Length: 117
Image 1 (tube, one colour):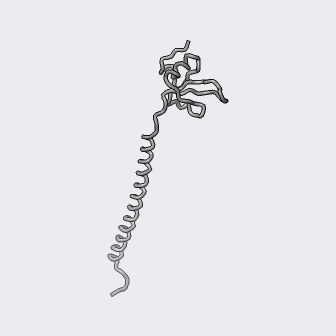
Image 2 (tube, helix red, strand yellow):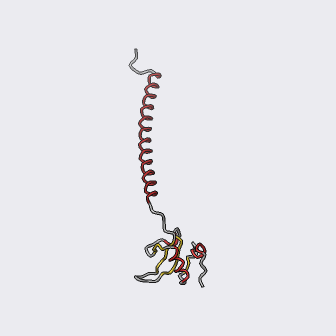
Image 3 (tube, rainbow, N blue to C red):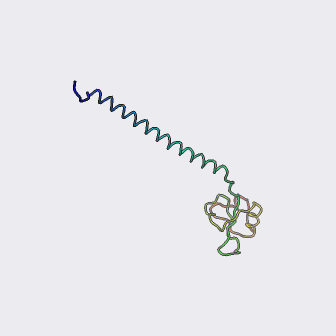
């Protein structure tokens, strides 16, 4: 009898190696999925705890104590920054009536139905 394995024995060996590698790869993929599911869950939980954005914002000019320059709706992309403060609907209306400019992108004057004099 020959010491060299037969072609059939080599094929069975190759199959066992592939099955073993596939199992290891599948286990790694399952670990990656578990980590990503945890990240997604943490992101979702953080989003649920985040307070809703304010409905109205007032933007101040540059410098300490500077007057308001613009009124925005809460979700306005132009109202990002440190010079923005949340205000009530009544405060937003009063600011618009006092001739504080309405943001031309989110149009808070239209949303509040305010027509300045």
